[in-house]
Length: 105
Image (cartoon, rainbow, N blue to C red):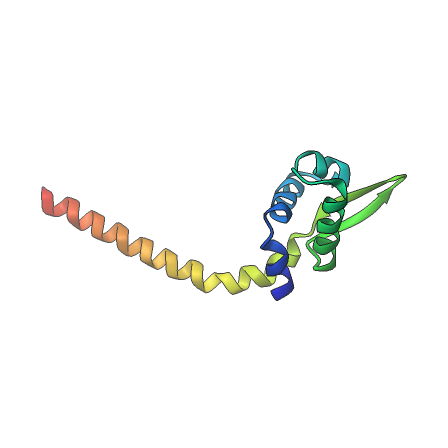
């Protein structure tokens, strides 16, 4: 999980993952959307591939990159208790707001 989180720490890599969430893309397509040179995009894609966040397939002369969301399962499981904590706090806030509205009536 640490390697995945380190890969996600870079904003360019997160942008690539967001793009790949919509559809598979080539390195060239990803490079067009980012303010970095093509070799930099290739390095970022290598990092994402090594941690399992993307996969690549060959299509003639092109490499097509796709998101592998299953690589985020461990991160999602780690975040679950924090989501529950926020949900509980938001529920408590909602309750206090409702009490405040009743008190003003």
